[in-house]
Length: 383
Image (cartoon, rainbow, N blue to C red; front, side, top):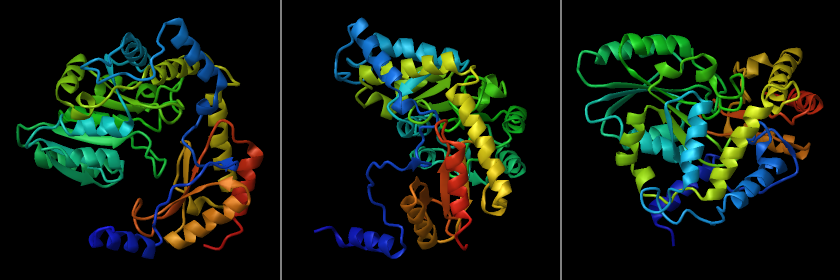
């Protein structure tokens, strides 16, 4: 028997129409995954990663331990150098996932009595990491840099460090802050800027190296988080920053220290995926260029069909249609699935109540016909 308190919480989820269940794979048109460039399905990446392992006699199935024990094979150093070069960072430190990286960073870097100011829409992994910190944390209104600066001024009277946290592309809205203005505010007030680039890598920048690189702000950011499980189609994450920050994380980040390292096959896949991104990104036929064309076309179809009032303004691969109420948005999601389109309903409490939404994730492999059809179907519903 499940303890009564736990059962009550499950019952409440079902009453609120917010009960989560594991789905299964399907053959629907994909408007839901984070595989923006189709790399997860690339046979070339799979085969080249396997060949690299064989050619370099890296045929272990596992890392055998943490990186501080037996798991730090030579491939880690090669891939971290490749990543730091690609993103124009002094160093990179690989973590097992984006969640681990955010927990690992925020639980140990801000110190007691330091101040963390974070955007109210920051990802759960950021907020969970902040909750593990000894620092004092305060949220600011989403993308409101005036409100942020007021908060910075409120706490700048002390000698304690201030950390400002945001995302370059927000996972549930698809929008972005003004990173240039934000970096200036942080520089003026000597605040440490941390940017999660999970949904920007592989989408923005001349070769998919993210918004920070695109805006040439690399040296104004204290730390960047990048993930490999989205546009790069594989698994893992890294924190980009100075050598001293990397040294600190190796010594004090518990999710890094006390976990088995990624296996060689994961590292080889990351290596090959980055190589693929570097080689193909400048071609007009590249997945990156096709993704950009699909984003432009999706937004033009929103305007043609007069759906602008429902959608959050976004030029990213994430496009969100606000449909209030868990029951309503789930109903429309299921109806779209019956028509062959996989569009996920994002429910409260994941997002704010009455701001439930359909989240359309765009990909290089979506066709204009598919985009037009799914949006035309959306116009048939009454909101």
